[in-house]
Length: 91
Figure 1: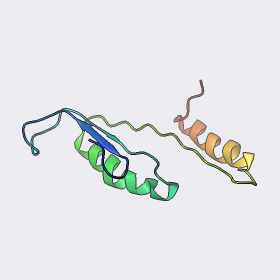
Figure 2 (figure 1 turned 45 degrees about the vertical axis):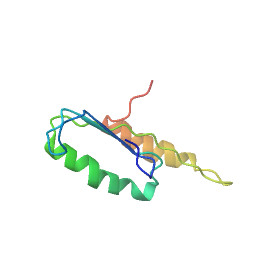
Figure 3 (figure 1 turned 135 degrees about the vertical axis):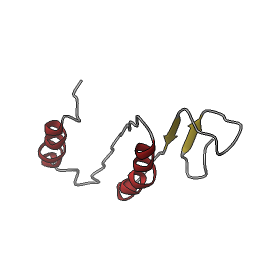
C-alpha cells in the first residue's frame, strides 16, 4: 500500500490490524542523507528488536555538483571503512 510520500509497506494480509505478521517489507524511496538516521530509528531498530531476522538494502547516490565529489572521500573514507568492516562486497 503506497503512502503519500512514495514509501510502501507490503505485508501478509491478515484478518485484523492487531494480528501478528509472518513477514513485512518496508520500502522507503528517495530518503535524503539528513533523514537516514530517522529511518533507522523508526523502522530498522524497532523491527530488529521484535524480529528474528531483519535485513536492509542500501543504494547511496551522491552528486557533487559542478566541483564533483573528491575521489579521496570515496576511496579513503567510504570504501576503506566498509571494506574493513566486511560489509562491502565487490562483484
